[in-house]
Length: 129
Image 1 (cartoon, rainbow, N blue to C red):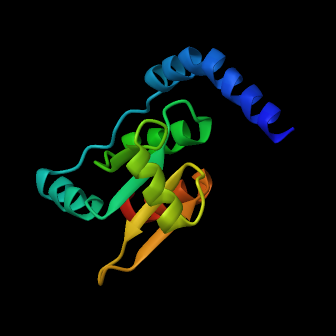
Image 2 (cartoon, rainbow, N blue to C red):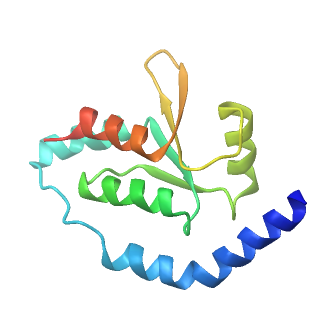
C-alpha cells in the first residue's frame, strides 16, 4: 500500500511539475535592495546556511520565494538530483523531508530546521530590513 501511495504522488508531481516550475518563475517577488556593505555582510552570514529542497515541492517554492525576496545567497541542495545531499539531510537532520534549512552556528553547532513557515519566520527575523 505504501508503494502505491508513493507511486501516486510521484506520478502527480511529474504531471504538475511544469506548472509548478512556471508558477515559481513568474511569481517571484521583487528582491529587497541593500547597500553594498550591508549586502556583503548578509552574503557572509548566508555562507552558514543551506536549503535542502527539490524544485517542484510547493513548500520549497514558498521558502525559495522568501529567500529571493530577502536577496539571500543561500546554497540550494536538490535532494532529488544529488544523492550526497540526500544522505547529508538524513544523517544530519534525522529524516528526508524538505524543505530543510541547515544552520551552522558559531562554534560549529548544526541546527536542522524543517517546516516552511518556521524557515521563513527565521529568515525574516534574521535578515529583514
